[in-house]
Length: 393
View 1: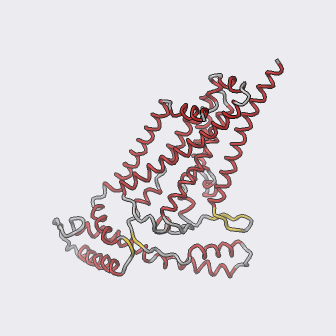
View 2: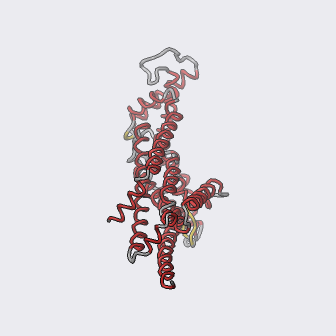
View 3: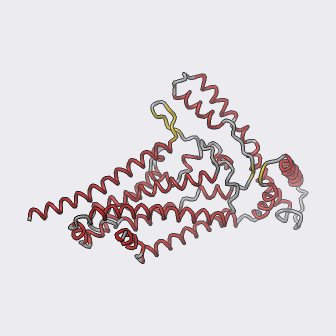
């Protein structure tokens, strides 16, 4: 426990680490506020739209549908005839009839999507049903069609909420960049700093010190990684909730228009949990990658530069891959998990349709395990070589 606390304090008592952590949180907050300013604050009729949605949100009923449709038709008529008033009207949601026309059009489109969602899937289900019997039962096409039928049948959106906040939240990626940069800064020197300060010789000379130190350092690195990911993810969710007023989290994920064809049938909040887990796994991959460079370099600067270069390579691989297949298999994609959930993302494996996210997770977990094994074995090898050198003297 003493070694553990020492290693943990050694990282978080560094003024530079504390300053960078605070700076990154501030940058994250500024970026989210900027997103709010660009998407919400500049919209002059958004407050009126909020008032309207507050009246009709919740379970979709016939009365709510009739209210929106009839009011929209009235506004459509006066706008097309150009008979709407340009004077301020306190009986409207936005203060002006033309402003109400805009918000009723938007709300009508969103409500229409929710109400007719089941109908919009009928063409997909019909095509899948045809393919199921058109191809042999043991073919990939037939299996894929069967999976599509099981995925999309019986879907419906029971309630209506303003989903713009969640749409903005799930498209926000800036915090992932900050998480990985912070991990690079604090972890790239975890092993190399001992070699640079010549402390490794003293630790290696201890019969049990080296083995215990390796385990503690790996344990501390994992805890720090999970902690940082959790802090940033919770911070993002709370600030988005405050700025955008996230509502309807218990609605199915496909109630968000950008996720209309997702293969995931769980709720929006369930997807938030899955996204968090994927970010933790992605963070652990980069944790072990950065530690790997720290193990093989005896100075902090080369370790940091190699870790940074690998990080940039992963980003370029993700951004400039020639197709989605290559893009998906960049570990960076775990921080942009909507790629796997916005559509029906499947990959053929031995003639069976497998969710692409499962394959990516398998790849990342295997590589992480390899990195972990190399780190652990290389440190034991260093201890063995040191003892062997002492015997030869």
